[in-house]
View 1 (tube, rainbow, N blue to C red):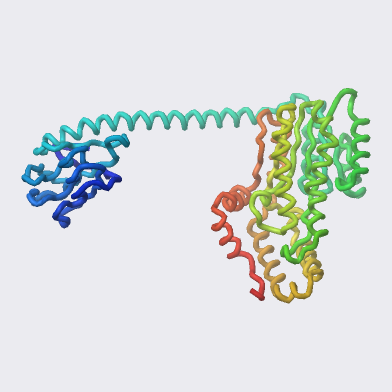
View 2: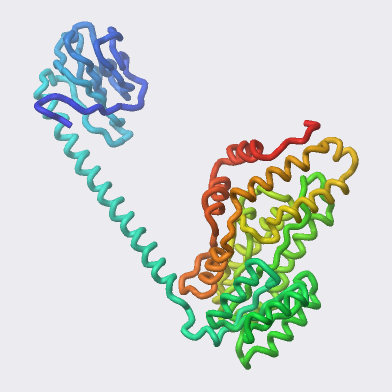
Length: 450
């Protein structure tokens, strides 16, 4: 900015290395700042022997040539500038944006102001154009987001009673809540449960809901379920959606305690059960150009928790993303529900403590000695503390995400659900790994042998 002929705005000039007297000339100590790394010229900027002594600082950019830009030359013909001038940019062949260059021969403050004003006005015009461009771009992005949000509120079905949905894991938790909600909305729901008792309980909720027993780890059960559902569907109709919700935590404990069988248990349900159910019912989904909705977890994005469960959820996320890309050309969409920590059987502290004691007891003696008697207690205290402060209790938040994925005209590919999922866990997986590692190590105990 130029005010009344004075340079009143600081502009830094960077970089370069060819100026003989850059940054202060022969008299480095002056009553101000001389900041310059000029690209060419043998004087650069700053103070020379015969410079006027009452300048606060002279900082200039060297034009290609012998004597540099402004500042005192050997004959003392420099301008008197009572404010700091710092020029930002490079010039010459590098062609970077700069506010102004001044050349040898300017020996008055008025000439300096006139030279800089022209370049400053040119820069200001370009700067304003870029500002307007980015402002318009931001407005367009906000409008697109808003329109998508409005479109997402609209349901894809005007008559839900003509559409059929299969949900696994309806014994409790998210699956049971979702089955009841979809039934209330009007969808025809097939609810797969692990136990006959859960089937009887679910039958009491609605006369339209059809619950049945299916263990997703058993191919025979999946075949029987397929026969049951195809016989119940109207002729030439298929499934609008399959919701793969069945899941277990698996054994709890340090990875070193666990056996091959311990890792296989959650993989059989959380991953292979998901893949086999999806494969079997995919022709029925494709007939309706419907949807696959998979329950994964935020622990499929950041590894904090029991190793078998985390491994299974990473695999479930991978399967879901591969499936989404493979089925898109076929008219079938695939969606991932990634809840944070919620109060279900998976986060039940009593069940977790019982499992931890069992896995520690089954570990080799040298491993138990290394971890020490107090390790399991400290680990359980940490888990209980996290459950107390991080676990959500409103399961309807997750059910809302399922419902949006199943019924919206503009469903999302991924739904990270809950404040702990969107704030705590999302932050952990977005930070650099070394930061996440430090935070996790600060929370969880270390073995006594270490």
